Length: 494
Image 1 (tube, helix red, strand yellow):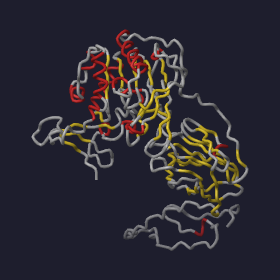
Image 2 (cartoon, rainbow, N blue to C red):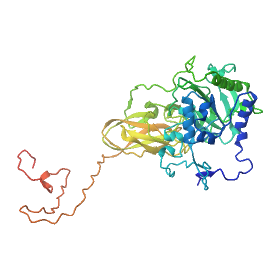
Image 3 (cartoon, rainbow, N blue to C red):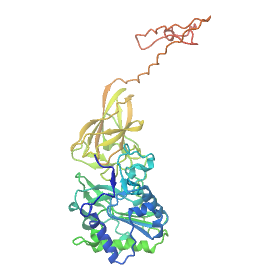
Image 4 (cartoon, rainbow, N blue to C red):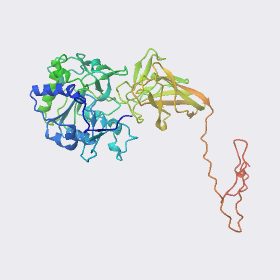
């Protein structure tokens, strides 16, 4: 099992993790060489002095800044909303919530706590549970502009940075055109825009790159960098890659165009003191406006997924091995949701020829354990869609849903909701099981009758109820209790 607490009193082996010289060093050396006026601060400083960023023009997060406490997150969010500019020169920032606890001698903040599992974290305040920030309802994309998507095992597997929206002011003087690339600075961890999570409130927002990246599972995702301006006027830049600093000051990677891009970001910070600046060319809204597309109903018990109506992050995926030549998927890196959200779903209409109980079968391809589940509903039921885990596979295989609904003959909507990105859906089938199953009535608990008190009224007797052999029974055949009595009624069937 993994450790859940790490003491800062422990001895270091050699130079510790040594990552300072992989990421921060190249950025800081370049910034100092270029004459920027810097003040250095640690995570502990931010945790204990959350108002500190308000004393400065900009806040820069460098390197592998993955674990943040709630005071840290709150501090930087408040700084942005007060007009302090932000830059994230790395990737995988603000991914896990951490807590700081005292050591055994009572010295504060000497133990870092991260359970990564809310079920075993004993904290009593849910807002402090040490799980992913996005699972706490505070996705990092709402602050950074993009968020962690995936990683590769080594920076030797970095890919090229590919420019997008080259007319944005951030690329002024670089000579960049859309599609131009910078060699091998994307990795080993990368961020992306994930449409299943909200964007930050903004006056304007732009993605600055669309870089193809092959992660450790062999999945191809699109890594992004971004820039947006908050309503306070603060600009927020995110590099979206751990290796941005290499293009600033590392032999074999230095690129004058990335250096100029970084100058443009910092100079914009210095020249705009929290005054909103309109975007000269709006890049458009990234969140699509939903359209009321009617669902076309399939006449049989099988329907191709691409015949359904796609909502939110679902998209078509060309696939020669899918039965119709296409599948539907939320692309790798777009984000996973561990609570059902009907904004991201596929509605597939299928016609049942007979009333009865049916099995739902999905032909799906699940490339790995992080991309092997959906949620499912039929005609909007159950109200909270049910989790559906499918088998890991490299081809499309049949998987039975956890639901076996009883439905009437006619048209029905099977809704597949996003749970894990990268899970591909080829087609849906309904398989007839048999007649509808009615819910079993809960038997009435048998009570011990009280000892009868002598009374003019005869005490009730524990008469057994005769059972009708058919599906109908006359009411008078039942055993009557309390105030119920028989009356003569010529209109009654019995």
